[in-house]
Length: 164
Picture 1 (cartoon, helix red, strand yellow):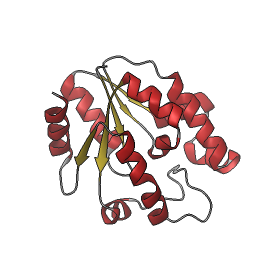
Picture 2: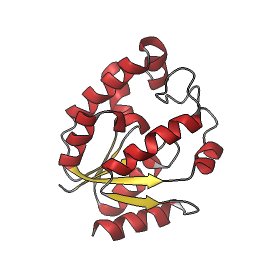
Picture 3: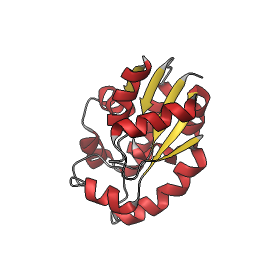
Picture 4: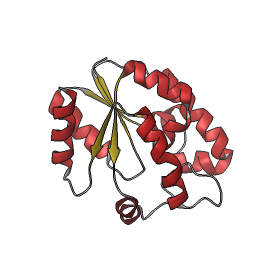
């Protein structure tokens, strides 16, 4: 169980923090959004547009359940917490770290919500998505890092401090 799994809202910094954390700790890095794109042969947004929200979540779950990693930092898509089976698999692989940010910070960072590949049902607002997902992130997290007003380096320091 020496993997570190990062969860949180889109734009909370999972991929950015994940790459630097992996370098800092001498671990491999895996971005599950890129894994989905590789497995399915298309961009996340195109998959969501073509197949719909529910089918995309099934693709994401299949990709997550296929992960067999060792000594790896795994950055997940923000919607990973909708899959109980996927999250149980990830929790068996390592420590789940929730990178927590306020709604206002997420909103200020997300400028490309309709093209970024965010799994959200038609008609749902970013605020609705935030309110729906936060309890799920909190439920699955082994460690929560409040990243509000912290630099990438400070978030990484907090993660390493809490993991060790």
